[in-house]
Amino acid sequence: MRSKKLAIALALTLMLSIGLTGCSKATNPSSQAPAKLKVAFIYVGPVGDAGWTYAQDQGRKYLVDHVSGIETTYLENVPEADGEKVADQLVAQGNKVIFATSFGYMDGILASAKKHPDVIFLHCSGVKTADNVGTYFGREYQARYLTGIVAGKTTKSNQIGYVAAFPIPECVRGINAFTLGVRSVNPNAVVKVVWTNTWLDPAKEKDAGLSLAEQGCDVLAQHQDSPAVVQAAEEKGIHALGYDSDMSKYAPNAYLTGPVWNWGPYFVKTVQAVKDGTWKTNAYWGPMSDGVIDIAPFYHVPTDVQTLANEKKQLLLSGKWDVFTGPIKDQQGAVKVKDGASLTDNEMLSLDWFVQGVQGTIPKTQ
Image (cartoon, rainbow, N blue to C red; front, side, top):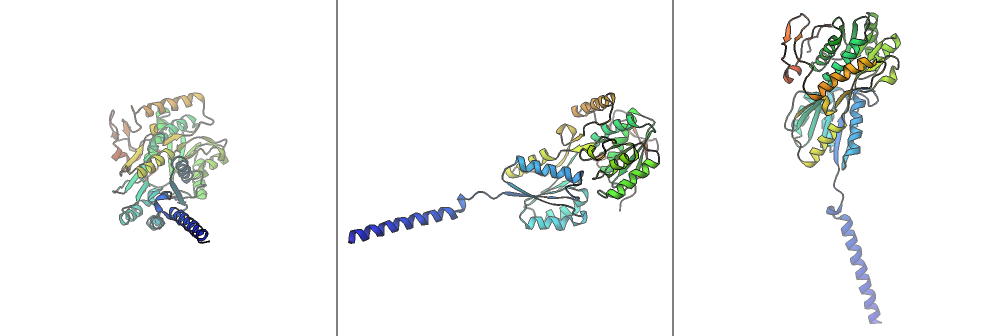
C-alpha cells in the first residue's frame, strides 16, 4: 500500500514538474516572436484621391508585401499645420519610422524629431534634414519635360494651360521643365499658369481648368492630387496631362499621359536599412533611372510623338543630359543658364523664376 502511495506521489510530482516547465516555456520572453517594427504614414489627402496620396499608399502596400516583421498604419487628410501634433501622437503609439508625405509638414516634423531622437522621420519633398530626419523625392521635372513634348506636339492653338498648386520651388521647377519640353518641339507655344493654392480641392481645380480652356488653351496640365483638371478637359473636348497616377479612366477621350510615382522600392530600401541598423540621414532625390518617377502610358498620342518622347527619355535615363541644360532664358529673355552649363541641384531646389514661354507670375509666399 505504501509503495502504491509512493508511486502515486511520484507520478503527481512528475506531472506538476512537466506542467511548471510548460508554463515556464510559455512565458519565457526569449521564446516569443520579436516585436514588429511599427511604421506610420501621414497623408495630406485621402488614399482614394487617385493622385498623390493614392500613389504614396500604393507604395506603403508594396512595402508591406516586400518587408517582413513590420506593421504599418496611416492617417489621411492631415492638415499640414498639424504635422508636429500628429507625429507626436504616432510616436506615442510606438511607431519608430514615420513618413510625412507633403511639403508643408516640414517644420512640424523637424520639431517632433527633435523631441524624439530614437525615431526616424522621412519627409517627402522637403529641403531640411537632421540626424534622425531624411528627405525623399524624385526628379519629377524629368517626367514633366517629357509630357511637355507631348503637349507641344498636340496643341493646335499653341496655348497650353497649367493648373499649379503652390508657388514653391517644386511647382515652379515642374512648370519650367514642362515649358522647356513644350518649346523644344514647338517654339511658338506658350504655357499659361493659374495658381489654386491647393493640393486637393477638386471643385476649385476644375474651375481653374475650365477657365484656361475658355481662354483658348487646348491642352491642360496640372500639379494637383485629383483628376479634376483632366475631367475639365474631358468636358471641354480638349486634351490633358494628369499627375501622380494614370488618370486615363477619368478622362478617356482627353487624357494623353502624365508623370506618375512609384514609391514602393524606395520605402522598401529605407525601412530595410532601418531594420538592419544601417540607415543614415540623407536627402534622396532620385532620377527616372531609379524608377521612382516615370510617365504613364500614352493615350491618343501619335506614334511619331511617342518616339520623340521616348528618345528623350532614354537620354535622361542614360544620365548624359538633364533638363536644365543651357541655353535657357527667363521670361524677359535674359540668359539664365549659358550654353553648355546646367543648373546645380541647389539652384533647381530653390527656383524662383520662370523660363521663356511661361505666361504667369510667381506670387511671393509669406
